[in-house]
Amino acid sequence: GERLRQLGVAAYQNVYAADARTVYGEDAKIDDIPVTEVAEYVQKDSNKYIGKFLDMEQKKTKLSWNWSAGFLSVFWCFYRKMMGCGMALVAVFFSCYFLSSVISPVIYEKLQPETYAAYEDAVVSLASEMQNAVNSGVVTDEYYDILLTVATSPVTVTTFIMIIATFLLTSVIFGFFGNYFYKQKIVKDITKI
Image (cartoon, rainbow, N blue to C red; front, side, top):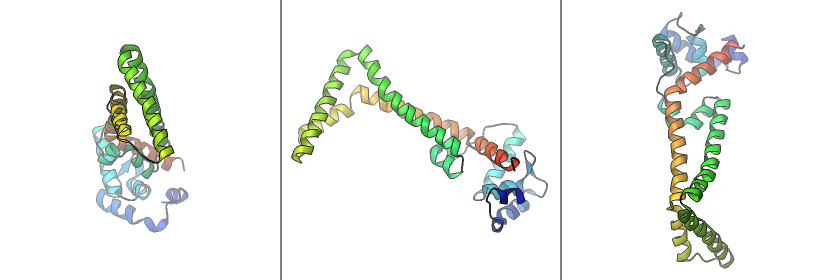
């Protein structure tokens, strides 16, 4: 209790600790930390997480599926105050977006120069049409045709697939390991007091 108040968890929120004590007993611990302290730290949905953590310890595994972490990995990290993990995911997403935006055109330029040349011409035409639309205030049908050509080109589709693959990979990793990462954060924060 006192250690958590030092972390900024208010004393009036002990309802979570009382609930955990009732559900799991006075002696239940997660990595030698009383479940009451874990409940005070986690607060909302604490019993769900405590149950998952105890199950992981009993089975001696790091795997435990978490739908929120799987589908909303970055947002889930920030919601659960896992700032380092959330920032790392943001960096991974931006890096993969940047790399896929660079790698895909390079691959096509080297392996399928005709496809890349058509893509490059369409991008240049799109930029020109965009400038015309800004200057005249009128968007032409040709602009939409060029936009569709760029959006459906193999270069753009490959870039999109690479970005989606990155998203799916992180979703699966955080779906299976999110509870473990969160448990490690909780243990680290509580024991450093």
